[in-house]
Image (cartoon, rainbow, N blue to C red; front, side, top):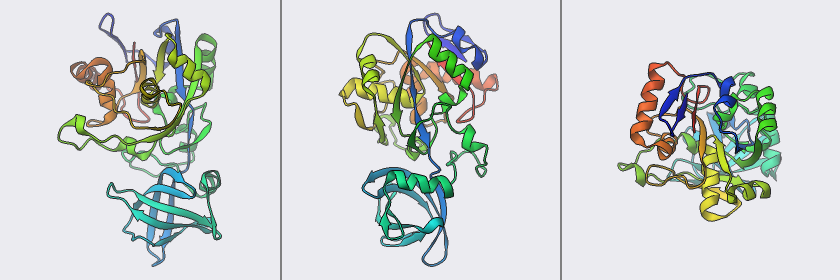
Length: 308
């Protein structure tokens, strides 16, 4: 779906026709994060089964994780390849802080990711009610994925094939940034007043050339909500790396991103509020009603919407 704000038109087309609808003199920004096999299955000291979902690295060999199954502080969990996790802290938000160890040595980020690549599973979104397959290792990864660290794909970018990506680079100034998508991206808004929602934070890094582009006056197409939030966070803070916790909504509008390519999102999510920050709540609801009527597919493996 293409929504043109200048003339109010809605066009239904195929993603391969994208270049017919993009403005000519723009720069395109993409998120080059790479999804890690962040879902692992193991056992407790008692022998009971446990499932761990990596959320984000913290410091040294400490990581924020989600654990399915009851655990206590100090508990040890055991996985394949002699990987162990010790529960260091139970957080009130439902996350757990764990220390990963292998053969009595602390495991830092790269070493842990290497182990997870062998024993872990692709962390499909919670609304996909099936186990991951070998195909997901390819399908749930962008063609330009590079920097390991995400537990969810920047899904708007999944639409690009190798050939479309090559065409994009030939026709448009193209830049990358990295935002490692955390499991918090699926957290619904539960606050009584939506603007009181406490936004999750995610690790990001923006190369110098991309920073220069953001600080220029050139129009920007953000491919996905992750790119949008990162660009807008930098536009406000001027910090090229750190943790992004920006919540965009109709009372906190974009100040730098001009155009948005995104998927169709869950109700009651911060992602649909980000869309509303571009076009308003009423127009967002109208566009989504149109998408439902036209039988668009929603969520991570679904269809896309371009706002110009």
